Length: 154
Image 1 (tube, rainbow, N blue to C red):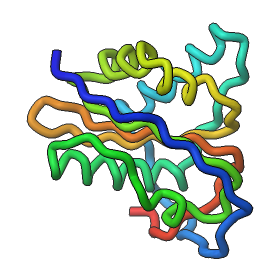
Image 2: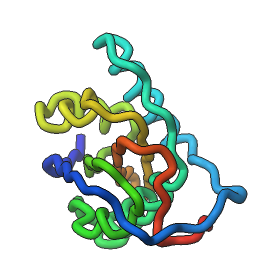
Image 3: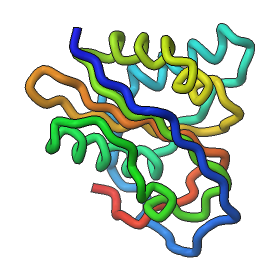
């Protein structure tokens, strides 16, 4: 099993004035939905509320997953706090594995990633990109729904 995961990041702020584009036809991919469903199942098993899926954050997560896949490397989005606007609190998990199930299992086996998955969040967005049989994923957790981002929906 090929697996790479990166450490956890979490930041807090009073917000940012920039705003992203509006709705449109942007949709979560099946593998993104798979990860978000697994996150919510894990939270339910631990007596925690489910997280709402946030498309604004999903756009940022997918862009970062594509960047990791292009570099064939796992790394945090060091500019996330500037890409997501009007946020209160953010966290991220970055990783890569052969498929959704393997990647989620690896995240849950890491105490730092698990603490983000089971953290005090309200919303999440997940982005994935498949490259040479490897699924690169970025999970972003947030406190405020639909805070906006600096990008337009694709």
